[in-house]
Every structure is written in C-alpha cells, then in structure tokens.
Length: 90
Image (cartoon, rainbow, N blue to C red; front, top):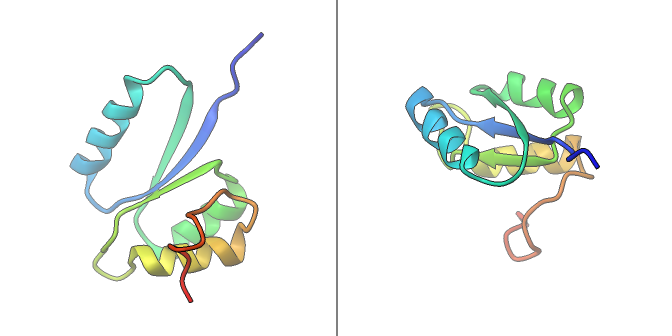
C-alpha cells in the first residue's frame, strides 16, 4: 500500500526557520510536501489552491500574524484540522 503524502502549508517569513522546520520534518516517518508562504495574499491563495492537511504558522510576521492566519484558515478552509477549542479565537 502506498503511503499518502501529507500536504503542509507553512506560513513563515524566515527562509532559515523554514529550512529548520523542513529538516526536522524530514526526519519523520511520513511523506510530505511543504509549501511556504509569507504574506496574507499568498496564504489565502494557497488555502484554496493547495488545500493543506496541516498548517504551521509563525506566531508573528511583520504584517500578518498567527492569530490572523488562524481566523483566515477557519474562514477559508474550515475542514483543515485546527487547534482545540481553547485555542480558537473568540
């Protein structure tokens, strides 16, 4: 049986941090495809086009932060697994 490829959308403005994350994930036992975005526009586009299974987000970007990304993901990709109910914005 062929293993399914996990689609990961990474919201990260630092190429070095993105590389560290990708390297850490590379040591895992699952197959993945990672796409990195830096802006609100790219994040919104990839939510609908790429349809990620998992979203990893930097907490604070220069013009777009993790809380905003969470709200946008809940709006644009409600079927993507998200945080537990305590972490959801009110």
